[in-house]
Length: 120
Image (cartoon, rainbow, N blue to C red; front, side, top):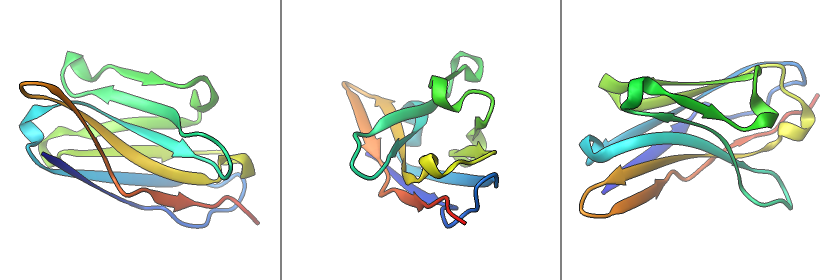
């Protein structure tokens, strides 16, 4: 089992920046990739970005975050970060951390989510 705890959310003004953190604990040796999703009010959850723990730390981004969000991994600390810049009001959402683990089967773990309101 992998447990995930997000931090770093909070109110940010349009055009501002924010860094989210997600610390993993438990069976972290089994994690193959970690990522960030978001769910805006009244909308479905969507992928923001993910990073492979192996494969040289390869990253993938959704089109809507390219060039503005950066995902990174501190492997020794089992912590994944999401640096968000040039935030717009439409980025207002609950941001959740996700981890894919491979043991006998593939497991998916979620954090509790952290709110990011973008408003002046």
